[in-house]
Structures are given as structure tokens and as C-alpha cells.
Image (cartoon, rainbow, N blue to C red; front, side, top):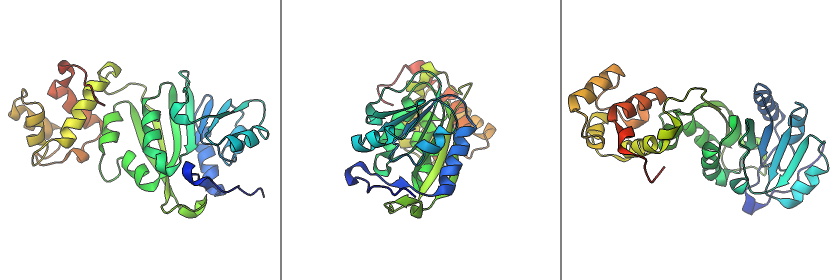
Length: 265
């Protein structure tokens, strides 16, 4: 069996060695369509099995030495690019994103992924707690709520730290996301919606009724409470208890779309 060269500490390289996890990632990608873009190919633990799907594959690797070595082992339908994904020009045509993300760069890469055009599905291996939070397990987070109208997130499985070399200090988690064919909020209103979500998450009050009254004071309080009842949410419920459809409904109620785009996301 081919052994992995030690990962570079400054690049956060923890290579996937668990065959079951590799097979699961490939199966998830096989259920999608279109060209594949892999984030962080490393020594090809995912790249080489993904090649067998017979689809066009582009691998992005920040370590030039590894990129060169892997390029010599891949077939003509695969292109290995030496680049930092954070600065890589993501295709605008439909494609699938897959990768074992460096744990210390997960949030930055996820923000880049969520703002990127083109992709239809992602299959990403990230830190376990990050995977749980992005999938809304135990309550939605600000980032998840800000992107829910356009993407569906799913937590697939937990991946033990022993599945990586060198072994990280935390477990990983397999997270998938799919672009909604019909968004819950129009794309042109993304900035306004995301600002509304941020204001609700950071707003003061003893629950959604108070927070929404302060966030959208032009909406009568009785109307806020009526809508919360329709959504089966208590006035004292917290923002993390909302799901994607709840957020879209409250954004529509707030009239935030008429207040113009935010300068922040």
C-alpha cells in the first residue's frame, strides 16, 4: 500500500486513510451529475477513486509538490491544479464540489463555497462540530440560517479522528449540501435577507416576539405574535429554533426586502 508523506503543519494537512469513509464519499458523489471539482487533493486518496466515476475531474491542491506528484498518476480526464481554493476561479457551469477540508481553514472555505456560483451539490469532510452546526443539528446557527433559502444541508455521518493521518485532535463529519431548484427567497434579495437574519440573531429580547418587535418595529406586535402562532413557535422561542421555511416567512413578514440591500452579509 502506498504510504502518505507527512502533511505540512502550516497547511493543516490531515490525510484521509479510512477506506469506508472514502467509499462513502465516492458513493455520495456518484449520486450526483456533472463535472467534479475536488478541494485539496493531497496524495489522491479521494481523487483516484473519484476518477473511476468516469467524469471530468479538476483537483485543487495548495501544496505544489503533492500536486505535481499526483498529476503524474492521474488520467487524461483529470486536471490537477496547484492553487489555493480561496483564490481559485470556481466554474460557473454546473459542477459538484467535494473535498476533505483542512480543519483550520474550514470556515473560510465554506464561506467561499456558499458564495460560489455554479455548483449543484457539495460533499465535504469537515470538523464534526462544524458539520453539526451547518446542518442545523441542535439548532440553526447564523451562517446556516443566512444561506438556508438557497441550500439544503445534511449531516451524513461522523468520521473518527483515527480515519486521518496525522491524527487530528477532533473527529470529522461528512456534510452534504444541495442547491435548491426553487429558492425560498429570491436571489436578488440575498443581502437584505442575510442582514435581517444577522439582526435577529444579534437582537436583544427574551425571545422572537421581542427581538422581531425591535428588528422590524413597523410590523404590529400582534401581527408578529399571530405569525409565530401560525409557525407553531412560542413568543419566547430563540432564533436557533427556526428552520429554513420559518426564516423565509419571517423575512417576508418583516418587510425587510423593502429596506434595500445591506452593506454586510
